[in-house]
Image (cartoon, rainbow, N blue to C red; front, side):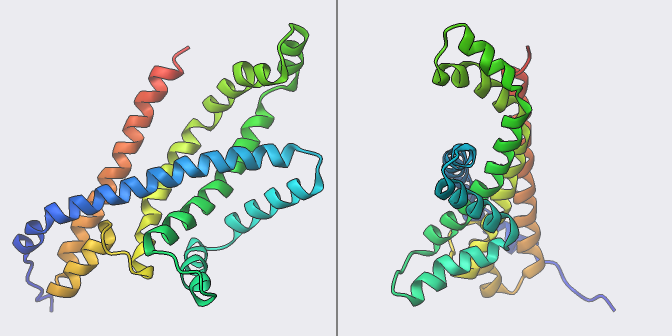
Length: 221
C-alpha cells in the first residue's frame, strides 16, 4: 500500500541554496569545457604529427578517456593521488576528471571534423600565397567549428550531468551536493532529488536553446 506523504514546502524552502548549487554546477561544467577544448585542440594537432611520442601520448589520452568510466577517473585523481601524498580538493578532482574526459571525446570529434574538410582546400589556399597558419585559421577552422558545433553542445550537456559525480568525493556546494545535504538532514529524498532533476533538465535545455540560437547567428550562410 502506497502511504508516502509528500512534503514539498520543506523542499521549496531549500530552493535558493539549490539554485546557488546549480550555478556552481554550471561554472564547473563551463570551465571543464574551456580547458577540454584547449587540450583537445592540442591533442588533435599531436595526433596529426609524425612524431611517435607525441602521437602515442595523444592516442593514449583519448583511448583512456573514452574507454574508462568517468567515476574511476575522478576516484584516481582524488583518492589515488591522495594515497600518494598529493592531496587535491574535491572540486579540483571533479574539474580535472571531467576535463580529462571532455578532452578525450572532443579530440576525437575534432579529428573527425578535420578529416571532413577536404585537403584540397588547404592546398588551394597555399597556392594563393597563404601561410599554413593562415590557411588553417581562415579556411579549415571555420568549417571545423561548423562541423563540431553540435557535438560540442552535447558534450557541454554531458559535462553538466557529470558534475553530479562530485558528491562521491565529498563536494557539497554543487547542485547534487546541496541536494544530498538536505536529503541527509530531512530524509525527504523524493522531493529534493525531484527538484534537482528538474533543475538539471532546465540547465540542459537552456544550453541546447542557446546553442541553437548561436548556430542560427553564426552559420546562417
